[in-house]
Image (cartoon, rainbow, N blue to C red; front, side, top):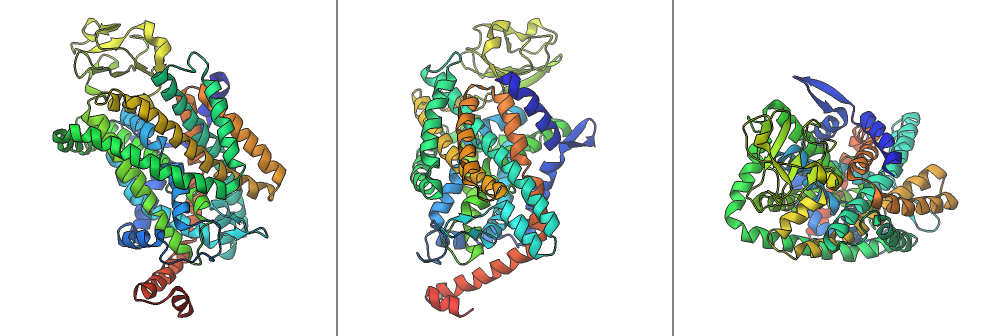
Length: 548
């Protein structure tokens, strides 16, 4: 399976994450630079809408400004839950571990910053998602980036450009649904299940994939109403359980939280790491932050388009809550758990060509980054190894004077890329021995809700590309379920490469569309704010609408 995925994943990764040199051997992917710059620009353009509209967003979610007979299929809360189910999940649990494993704790700082700035991006694209949605004869809503790219740019005199961008976006969206929204979720779920319960291991992960694929298929055949009903229950339930677990762990390490926060901030600007370390943490923070909250991708606009409302910007302000909940709150809590428990890479030092990570103490389990194949042949991956001192080689026997341990060749079969979900699981398990079992259940449910939400995103893209051809949509759903099985047995490295590439391929066409359509969003925001102000002053919804 990896032999099939690896060349595809590597090629896609090189194209989408094409980098520009920054000097001294450093470089940065163009797509990530554009995401960050756009998020900053939109925050300024809308005068810090991410702060100003927070209260308005909460009132809107409660249904203060909408009626049951407004056009659409689902409520504001259901739309928020559906979109959150695609973002609150393994991006918060495994994604944070990946960011720390590659970019250090400093990457978390940039994840949080991107979460805050991404609130403005999410507001913009979800407002457009409702503004340019299409409601068919059966009352079903069709929306998302491909719709506002085609119709919005056509409205502004760029029909050809809009059509081309919409097609490119839709194709990338299908790829993102199959990769990030499917295979990555199943891959990390399978890893957690096999590691915790010892079942479906030794090449049997695909069996778990079959079980999950059947469950996913049963839900996605019911469409957005069925998906929204499931996610509206699962997401709050799972999020509360996970947040409580984080609080329990952090309570036990309460005295170390200030130091952990200090580590996250200081590592983000660490002079010891040099410009290369700074850029590495920044890149991972942006990449994993966007992977977690989807701000700037245009995908969430698909989930928000079916909302019952007459005011597009009403759903835009609801959508800005997502990056805050997803990244600013949950990702930060996950990061603090990993840092305060000491499970992340500590006391890093350089010995020859290898980066050596010492164990916090002689009994702790840690992960190792091995940069040099001439020291230990593990294909430059991170080995999940046994306790320090057991099946390890002291590093002082190699070139260099630093102390620490590196894994023996006998552990090569246990290598995995960047630790992922198991790093987070180990963090919780170091405090509550039985918690990895609870986390495993939460992970599977998180992954399940994410998969059914992303299946809808891909379905809407296929609907657009095929002209609402029902056979094409059915074939897509079958392929989606097959990819669940494929993701269960592939390596994280290849799955993550492919997922990132297809996921971020949506960025370019989406950002171009956002810049073209900013005046439309600004007008819609002013209209909704005036409407909400009249309602807040005591007018009924009908009176407030008639006053316009």
